[in-house]
Image 1: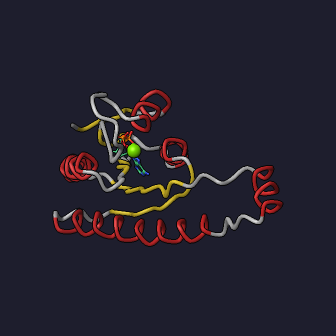
Image 2: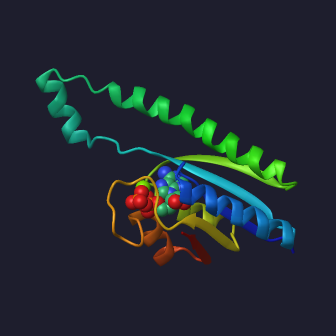
Length: 151
Ligand SMILES: Nc1ncnc2c1ncn2[C@@H]1O[C@H](COP(=O)(O)OP(=O)(O)O)[C@@H](O)[C@H]1O
Ligand SMILES: [Mg+2]
C-alpha cells in the first residue's frame, strides 16, 4: 500500500531541511507527501472579549493578523510544493490548518494515517540552547507514528 508522509513546515531553516529529507525518502519509497503549515491562532477567551467590550477595546485586529497568517501560509505551502515538484515528486498535497501547531500536526497524522512525520528539531522560536522546540517536543511525544526531527 502507498505510504503517506507528512512534513510540518513553519518557514524555518530546519523545516526546509525536513522537507528536503522527506522529499528524498518519499521518492525512494513512492510515498505520497502531505505538507502542513499551521497558522498559529489563539482566540481570546469569551470572558476576556466581554471585558474588552466593556473597556471599549477593539479586538478586531486579531482577525486582521490571522488574515495575514493565511496569506503567509499560502506562500509557504506553495513554495514547499514547488520544491517537491522540482525534485520530481508526483503525489504532493498541501494543507493549511489553524490553531495550536502541535495539536493540528498530531490531528493530521492521525486522520491521514501518516506513516512517517518529518519536522525540524527547532523552528522560528527565539529561545536558544534547547535541543527541541515545544512543537517538536509535543509532536514526538503524542504522534501515532515514527517522527523524524531534522537538525
Ligand atoms: N506553525 C507550524 N506549522 C507547521 N509546523 C510547525 C509549526 N511550528 C513548528 N512547526 C514544526 O516544528 C518544528 C519545531 O518548531 P518549534 O517546536 O516551534 O521550535 P521553536 O521553539 O524553535 O520555534 C519546526 O521546524 C516545524 O517543522
Ligand atoms: Mg516555533
